Image 1 (tube, rainbow, N blue to C red):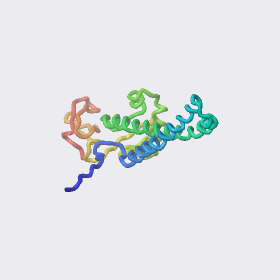
Image 2: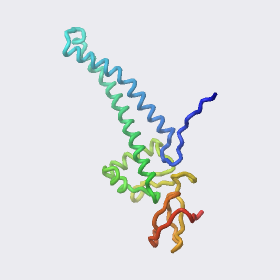
Image 3: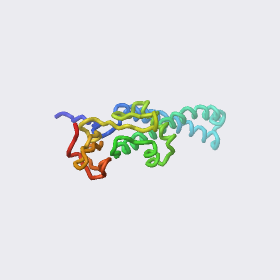
Image 4: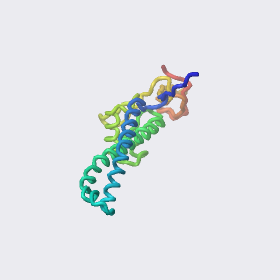
Length: 192
């Protein structure tokens, strides 16, 4: 009997799973390596302050100094965890977009943060290579342009309107309104 290997399938996502795995690994390692020393030195600090042990009282400053790097490691692990959450949240927003362009105003409205903060977060996330099949456009009005893989749920197709023959870009398998005449269109007639 053979074991089935589970793989992360990236159909319909803009997240680079390999880079996200690395970020998740860093988060877990930093938190795991820092928890025991934090508790150990915290116990020494508390015993030095409240206990009757003179040795721990004499080593109080050393315990505090030794505590600081491990607290910083723990906080760095939490920061990686927040960034993983940001990646997942941005991915959900990108997946719900219908026209293939997500402006900073749209992201600001959906995230409840100022556009400048969102732009700096996205710059860092794109520099780390956490997103694929999309690009961060900085010229003019900053926005994220979604391209998607052909044949996946994240791809976009050009749909020809039956009434005015105008071409509108829609996510594959969805419906919307024609950009030119406003009539309802779906991905039935595709311009290849």
